[in-house]
Image 1 (cartoon, rainbow over the protein chains, first blue to last red):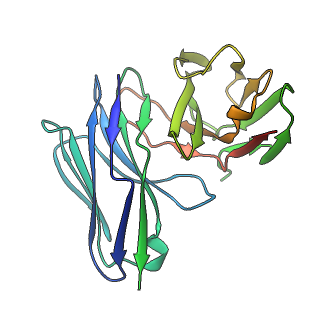
Image 2 (image 1 turned 120 degrees about the vertical axis):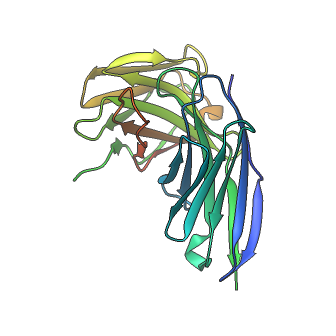
Length: 110
Length: 116
């Protein structure tokens, strides 16, 4: 089966850097995704890692270690609008199935 | 370009009634997913289709739930009879599935279901 773990909540200060960790267990792993979801809205794609290492995209970066079943999302120069839930999702279990974690609710404060 | 379109956006119904949720995926996408989101359980995959064929329905809670995809541009998720514990936001998502690196999922705005 699939299992995704990530912290439930995090708080950070505007302008700071925050790292959201995710561990996963899945058979037939074929990629790790991060999504952002604002309250009352649909999840939107942030990043995708299939190989080990860091993928950088503007203020957001995502890291993957397949041997450790571990990923993190790094958010730099935090802004108030970054307050949202961040969902870690692992592909695997056959085909293009994508299993989501329960999400990390990030609160950015002044 | 139009994204994934879901209807209705909100539905309030009474226990025992039939509920039908509808989804139109992005044109050209060949995979369609139905997810349910609650505070307690997060985003759960109910069922997904590739090329209109159901591939994995292991997440469908019980026989009260059924999903169909009669063609590449339309899918339904039906709950009959509905129960209060079915109250949740139901998301439809689509993607372009290939044998290579996986494509991202594009989500609809969701259908918020309340069963009284």
